[in-house]
Length: 153
Image (cartoon, helix red, strand yellow):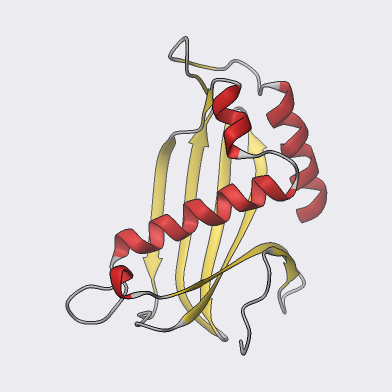
């Protein structure tokens, strides 16, 4: 990865389509050993998810304006190999077709061809003013989900 590519769709060797978000490991991302601290990778996952939604016209500021929260209800991470200060990492994410009203996101974090982290995050849609889970996806979010499903096939 000589140059960091702009965020966007990418096809991995297995023929799967993922959204690509690039990061460089900064000093504040590391712990005393020089390896990426686990909390830093969680920020990258969220940033990739936010940018992926933005790529289909669903800006996070619009979600806030519409009173839609997307809290994480489940998170699983697997650390395969460490990332180190200065590494250029590619965060790949894709939305798995929704199951009921849950949004399942899958992630891979790679440095060159080296798989460093796998993750799965599940979100629910909450009506912030009411403090209750939506019974159906809000229209604007449903449109974005449909676009993502079409992109990821």
